Length: 222
Length: 395
View (tube, chains in turn blue, yellow):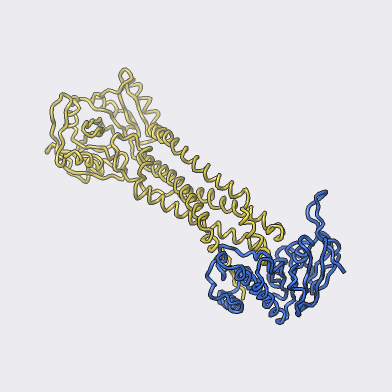
């Protein structure tokens, strides 16, 4: 499903260059739930960013669903993210001046779907995540847990096969973290391929996590 | 199901306009104000140019004056016969006119002597003569007044008549027979039409003298030859052609346009400061939004389209509103404040109405100088941000 082959990622040039990833090779199978663990700055988020096509490797290949994501042109790269990836960011990255409903439909806008289809999908996903009563509320007025549910809804609205979550519980308290873990369990049961980057120990003992991969100083520890 | 046109993108653009409320309201207000100012200035200028051109086109081909010691003096009426004998001169019409200062209002009226059975030297006067009983003017010791004069007289409690003070200090009571409205508001508002006899008596001019003489010429290409003949015949006479008057009007107009040019430049400068601010980069919030949209599957193309719709809708509405306000301000309200700068050659500030003359070329130039420039100023920095990796923009 997801292959990273001899991937290097360097930020900057010359003496100030930062080598974020060094010769990373990784394979995530379809339906698998993989946790990338490591401290801050270890390179976990960079791996997720490459998998989602948000950035390109300096060298090496990133192949997702048999597509060389790292070599796609902007239009196809965007289409790939839109149709295959649901990304849950650490800081949620919701647009604070938009309502819950408006945030959730953002990934659907370029698809040029009919208003009826958009409405059906957004109602479904809001119902699943108990967001319907908050639909018209500006996201800046929501609690952290509610904001994360909006972020999950936004990641699920286009029914992606792959869910990528970057430090999803970093801004949540214990009970909200538990709720998130249960939401991910549902996604796993639905057959989604899930990659989570975290240093939250809660994830290391979960029964539905298939593999835990440790990343340190831009390298995978075997 | 894909549709031909992505209305969701337009909806999102509209949403963005409303959600970034205060900032967009400010930009919308400034754009509307600038377009309103610029288009008002240009509309007033175009309308007055149009009015002046219309006025000039109604003027006689040649106006003859007599100069003595560099000053204009009356012309003996006997010269008419000599002038008419010059080949190419169709008619020669003597005019008796002058200014009458109305002290109480502090304004000058233009008194024009009219002969009921004589051909008038311009169509507007001929129309007035045709519409009113001019022979009754002389008989009843009456006058016809322009709408501007009527307003001033009414303000000074003269409803039915006016007492002129003649050259020798006597009172001359003249009844108001009627009022006329002219399409050529600028020239007609301060005019009082009276009989030639009455004009002579108020100004103290002998019956054998006239103020000036206007000539109608059969062949316009002969004008310079005819002027040469007149100068040879009467060296003390000055011939003013329609072109001379046109140039003179244009000079007055151009001089006054200087004020407007200043206003124009201030407006343009303000607009380009806004444009420069917009084009010089996105705020961190805007950059983050571009990154989030890219991360959620928007292509550069989608982001630029959305920014295009957003800026185009905003600037187009500001443009339409600015132009609409201008039309209302200039052609319905008659441009209060600004018009006074232009209307200087009539001593009487007339209640004149700017003719509705919309120069579509000017509207198009304003459009291309505002809407596409603003759209470009929004799109260029968005394009710069959207070409970067989403990851990089969001950091």
